[in-house]
Image (cartoon, rainbow, N blue to C red; front, side, top):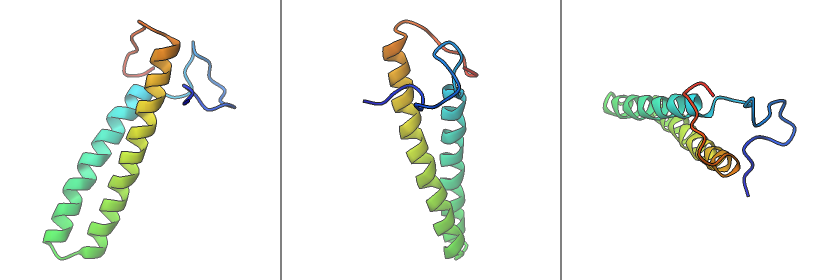
Length: 87
């Protein structure tokens, strides 16, 4: 089972270790940006740059999965609590 925070994190349930909602938005932006740049790079025959952008897009997808798992754990620990973008 995924915990809401890393085990040795300094944050608590009341004061989050990281702003998960903000990380979600930023990772989504990174995924979208890198996907567009990858397509543009492949169209411009810059294969190395396209591969690099695809690699960064994959990192963003992994980050999105981790963030969603932590958000789900937080929802289980704090049912009914809504968090703003920055908490």
